[in-house]
Length: 334
Image (cartoon, rainbow, N blue to C red; front, top):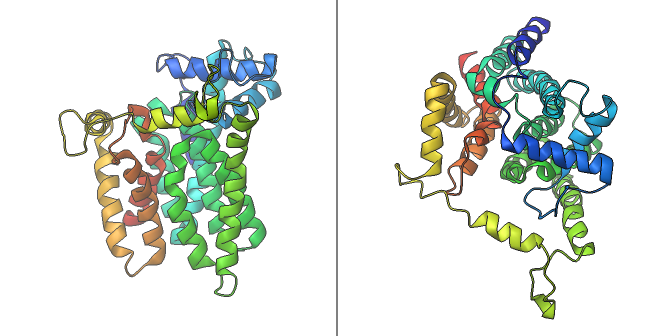
């Protein structure tokens, strides 16, 4: 594992401040983190609820702990250094999850190595993107559920961490059915309903803070609600706008943003995309007999469902899928 982490560090750290180019989103999240540290605000301009703020809150905390935004040169470099730390942590978590599902250290090492050397991963995981942070939280919460000692305290901690994941990037909600299924099969019959309700309640409590903030700021409801015509941003309005952002029908191979992105992914890293997709299908079928294999397949299928839902798909949306494909490939191969 030390060797894998050494390889991973070399692959992701080499020239990471110069490649790939600084993306617009990176500057946005760094500026919002700067605003938290210096102004006590969620954004330097009007915060319009385009994303929940947990991701750049973590970046702000990282900047405070490392001596500011310019410790590593340009401010975006500070965020990229955090992405490297999160990638290494995610690599360890992926190893742990694969080992728990297969009882094979070799499978864990293979998954970690595929994850670390994926060309798509090296390109996108260097960037300061919410998807990278969300991936870490999801893997951490999943690892807690797979731990040998399945206790209510760990289920609650898992729920807290998963709630933070949702408040980092909303697409994490597509993993909820899988997490509920894992809790269902791992909890004893007498406490099953109570454990499921507890997990959902804690996740809901964490996520509700976001809605409570909007309510207290009087920015929850749209303009005109109950006679309030004062111009203001609205959480509900933003959620509606995000929801209706079209990406083309999944059956439209030429205009769908999913298929356009898929062609880019295939060009950059055909091995992990094709082999990972095939491994997911095989594992779902094999999961009829082997429950742990089914969990791996469902984990990957959950995020495929998000990508193929028919909404807008941007190229970096593939980030959380990369470790899941590596997991399925390793399980199938080992």
